[in-house]
Length: 553
Image (cartoon, rainbow, N blue to C red; front, side):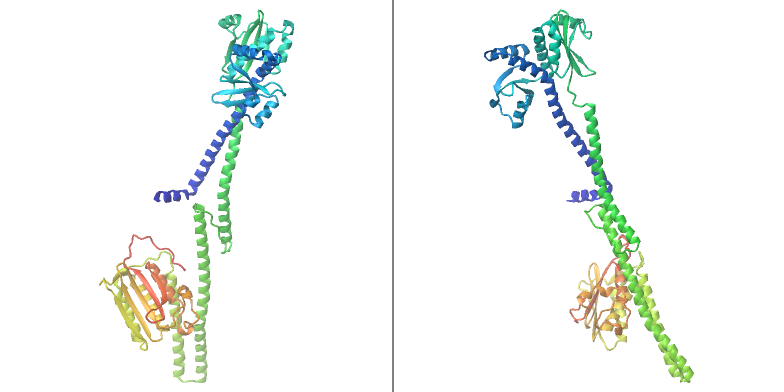
């Protein structure tokens, strides 16, 4: 399973995919070329044999048709003994032939079939005859050359000398190679070969350069018969190789083009979406196909586009919310200044003026608090923020903040619980200032919405530390549990502007927990029935862990 995953991961590499695609196209083209050469040669070889044997077939047919019916067997025995090949006369019905083969014989054409290492040849006699002459050849070129020369020699010897040239010209029409009568001994033969010719033997010359054979035989005392050149079958002629090579190049080019076109098309989609995004269309997305490098790049692009869209939306909402939040204290300050001016003109007592000045001072404090919240939220949103973690007693830090709220909110009942069944050390790696800020925001949030009771509990575990802050307010609907952590977010029920706050407290808590590699959760309190906020921290912060990026918006 591990090797399969590793192979799948390697195949996701775009360069490896291109390499394998080109290699596959090359191998496929090579195999296609081999198949084309093989089947082309089968067709060429059959045509070559048919053309080569056409003269022998015509001569045998002419001789056979001149033989009376009662002498056919004697003629066959004589031919077989002389030619060294076995020719038989048989009925068509005795052979298992396909309709295509029967049609070929009906057209008075040779029929060639391959049987083991021998070539079986069917010679049709006439269009009306139901018989065929058959023979089997193992050395086609050599056997047909010997048989053809014998038949030609016999035919010319039975022809008057004056008519031999005319007879040879008529016979040449059936042969695929030249036939010629010579009046002088062949110059290409040596002394030994000339002596063999004088004894009436057949001499065969082979040309290495042209891959052909020429046969000579003496017809009379001053006449020689030249047969050939008969060119041997060339399985790899230049024209065939050039044609297959060009066809292979075309197939290879089309295969590579088709493969690269898919990659280029997907990259163009990515380029088009990037251009749209750069032009301000934040809705631009790339369709995902497969699981390769380009798909991963498309996924990363879509995530980037979603992040940009979310950041821009958050920025717009933040600007709108900050403007809205600043408008109220600024309006109150303006109203207070106007009141002071009116009181000064009317000669009002100093106490009333001091009251208005105090109100302005409270509004300025409110502005200062809002600015501090915004700066803290922005600072925690920096990229790769580095916090100084120190091992501290988190139960003590939590209890300190708890006591501060308990002293200033006498109308509420506070309870503080520590759950440490394993008697673990309360020391945890935290950034003390931000940790206390997170606990302070949660308890302050509970104070605003609680009716009578607030419960803070610390849970010590082997690898984690959890703090729960619960209240007996109306709680938070499940559908708003994620939205509650968004900046400047307020719900429609009891958690309204009248409760105070700016909607940044819980967002700051979430970012603090993010930089502590923990998580912030909210659900319904099983003890008090209101909201329960839970902060979960790891007990140890390791420098070996990869640095965190920008926190989620």
